[in-house]
Length: 293
Image (cartoon, rainbow, N blue to C red; front, side, top):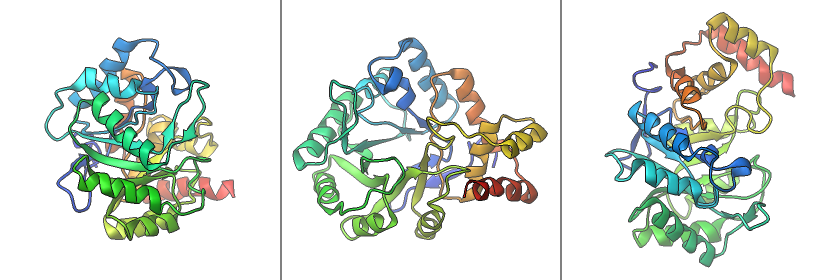
């Protein structure tokens, strides 16, 4: 892996969409609590333009971020979009005026969500749409998702969606969805310390399906580990850079979408493809998860 190619390239299965493995997550472009506009809209535009200029061609977003804010900023910063840019969005949630996160899973809500994304992004069709199961954020919400995935498959047949993914799902829900439509990616909570999806990642890798960890750095409770800090010190890197590099080494189907509202922090994230981790260091880092048990 090298900095120049941002961790290598990955082609979503059954598609012509090829992305660099280090992408960008747009959630932090909205205001505090992922609500309303950012404090510095010009800085948000600058981060997106810097990412694309550096070679990033995979942007993760949702129209319920803001709501609508991040998609509108993406359009302002990048439209007309450069060739090869893949924008992945998600459905399944809504943000009422009380700023909570609520499910939006009826046929009417999912269909309206697609049209909101199309309008705010300025697109005729969405590259990839993830159905996001609302819940704890740990991929543990049980229950059938057949009804919702069927709606997305119908929207795909209508040409509004090109490909379908899943977010915050269990292994059983992935299997269920695959009986309805091809699944090109799964986006779940996973990082150096939280490794509940190890078996799922390996299963998806055998199928050539992308796995995209959200909260790759711990989310609202950032990763804290003496071992991680020690390794970072020896490598001359930050702990967060090492945690991202570990994900790239974990499996070739893992794609990164770290988010930031800072150009300087973005540049730090984009260098992790050149951070080499020896087998000995990987073993040391693997001990972090065991310590959490």
